[in-house]
Length: 71
Image 1: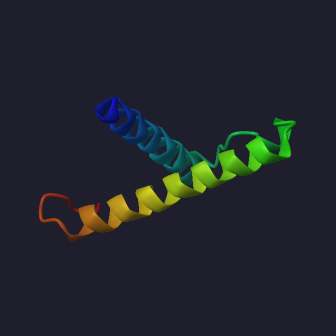
Image 2: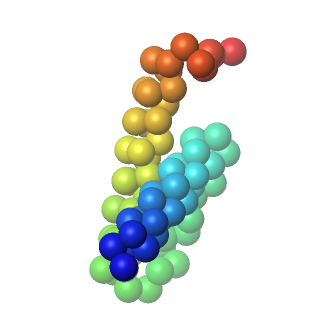
């Protein structure tokens, strides 16, 4: 049970980071203004901000690695 929760959490993190990457490269974002419930909208906003943090963290880690280079 715990392993499945961890797996789902990592999957959610990866999806959020993917959405952050899409936002950075294309400018496209989910239309949160169409979510009618204010609390759910705030939860989604927090989820997407966490993806931005994870994306930034990955960029820093990759930038320090010798296995990646900027072009």
